[in-house]
Length: 288
Image 1 (cartoon, one colour):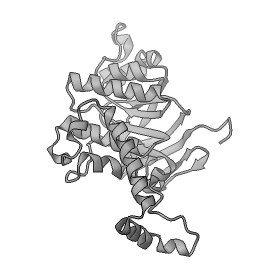
Image 2 (image 1 turned 120 degrees about the vertical axis):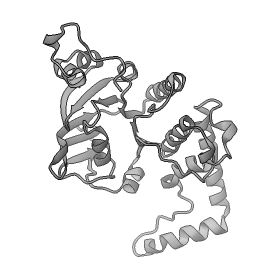
Image 3 (image 1 turned 45 degrees about the vertical axis):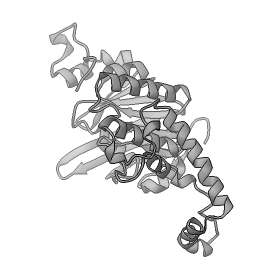
């Protein structure tokens, strides 16, 4: 990746559903180590944009480039192998698996001992070899699994005592907030270069939101590149290096948090009237 190449670059991304244009010719750049939030009213196209960037939907036009490579229309599993991890607006966990096993699922692309890197045509036997090695469990496989479990414990420790005492519990038995924590833990187990968080505090109370904000703040301090969708704007304004605002599928503002918060187009999108109508108006702290 050259010095002039963005870590993540979106150009002209467009998605239509019948007569509705959910994402309309969106351009976006993200630098390595940057924390970028995408905000906007409900129905603005934020989650659709995430889906297009992470292989969960195909665009009608435009491109997505990651670390200098065109990743447009690549499958989610191929993007995971490149180091792109995400969470979802409506939390997704494997309900019948334990907390530990849910997190280990996130590390699947990092397991090498059970996935021989054979050249073609031997690589066609890869799935058979993977099953065989998982069943036979030679020392290399056992050692790798132990390393991954130790890493998973470190990840879970980020959540304090919320998940560690429930390590072997089935995930369906957890509270809503803890299931969201498990989902983030699973994403971190990928060892991501880029982490996309879609409304990680949705449905959380004030205490849970504060804990999640502290966790995401720690991830930012670690240098992880983060894309965040979030409706709680006080959190967005405190964490973000830069904020992109969408409305009706289009980017209407892009800048530093303070600049965006006082942008007339943003105020109109959130409050439904122009700033000239109320000179003192600004985007509310928490827009639900």
